[in-house]
Length: 256
Image 1 (tube, rainbow, N blue to C red):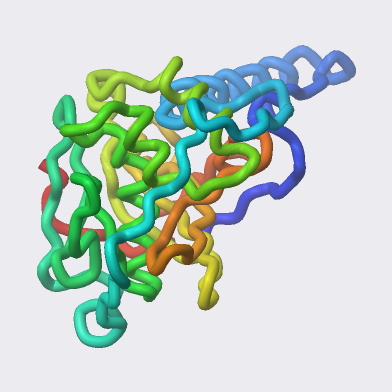
Image 2: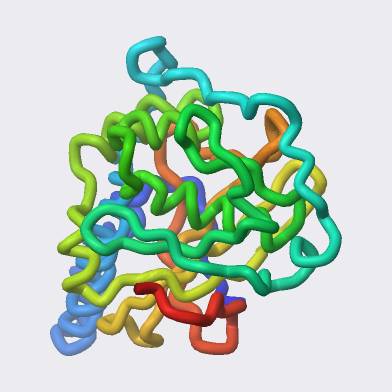
């Protein structure tokens, strides 16, 4: 599993480095590395535009609609297909602009609530499918970006910031496609009864490994997985991961 430097800084802070005391040649290398990180953050994390001011906005009815609860318990089986790393019935759901992500009728989403795909198995693969859907579900059809984000993000201090900043600066599907960014797989950093940390792995041809990963915290609430953001609206602290092939579970098949 790829490792990252965990800290409490915002995304903007992670790319701020001091290099005035370095020799010119070393400084040039550091500058180049920073440029790569900045480009990756700007293109990739624009999917969920990071909040740079570090402040948490108070939830409001207008900006932070309560997370919808499924009608009745999801009650998705946790054995059989749900216990496998990659469900046998995996297929690719098509959203706006050619963006696709994996779904499973057996593991999730297994039903819809007000038109929103929901109900995932309480397993590692269920959490992984839920995380991938939460991350890319904003590109789904039938709802506005704001409605989709409000549905998939768990209620909390940073929800309004995460929703508002992403709506204002969402990365266009065409930009993601032109950069060769698509879903590749996942890895599970930790898994417990009510909380999981899942690295959603995507292709990124320009990165050193050909991949990058976004670590997402998923919380089990209202009988389903919801994505939890930091109090400042960011998805996580630190830099994006750059796993290599073999460091993660590949979904396989075609992303469309």
